[in-house]
Image (cartoon, rainbow over all chains, first blue to last red; front, side, top):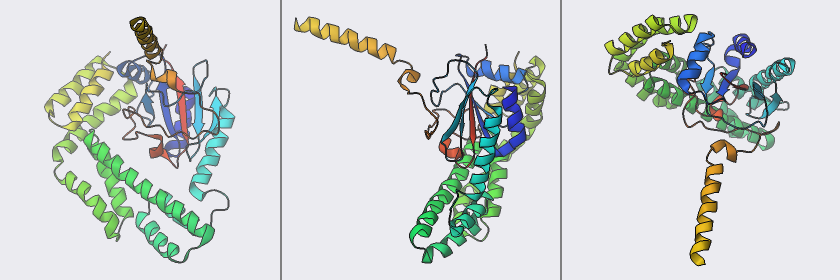
Length: 256
Length: 69
């Protein structure tokens, strides 16, 4: 686990990490365990729901998926550290540049999409697909699908963040999406309902501000009874907000 | 005789339901080269809205199986 934490620190948002607890501990138990080791607050995901079976006998064991969701390595994470890092590096490079042989028209689209320049990517796509034929048309079609999927996924993510007590993160994401969608009325139109939500979310944002310092303390110090009580008080003070619901869960994890 | 046959069939069905009671028992082992498309029934903690592997398309994913004991 410490090696995985270090990997996540090194790669940041270029690597997603999902940690699956396999010995029957409930969420509160394994989150307290992780908090005690100062593993939380590092943008790693925690679950007890197995997404697939590896057939491995011991723990820990791992599976590494590349940028297409295909398994490229499995085994013992401590033994395979070199293999893991070289596969991650290769996946990141392919994700940014595309597979070998990708037509330059599609590669241009991909570059713009990966940078979050949604409006420019859509404009380039409309221009290129008008005259495209054969393999170029096929590649552009795939990039177009991925562009739509990626934008829709970001929209859905920002809605989820708002609905689940992360209003500041949701707002930050929407602002980035708006910036990348400048002068594209279609994309901006899709963002409008979300932007309107934030105008009525002052209470949520105030609660998020009150929680953020306490949450940071929990990640840095681990479970602490007094901290748990402070988080609980914060939740009571901001009762009725989605942030307060999340804070109540955090208070449980922070309790010793 | 018909009632006995039905009774035995019911017991066999109940036993097989018990042995496959865990969702994991029905899953086959994955291998290198398989594409994973799982959607979680509940978004993982600290996932910030990621609910499926498709949400992470474009990023390599390290899935580590561990235990608290």
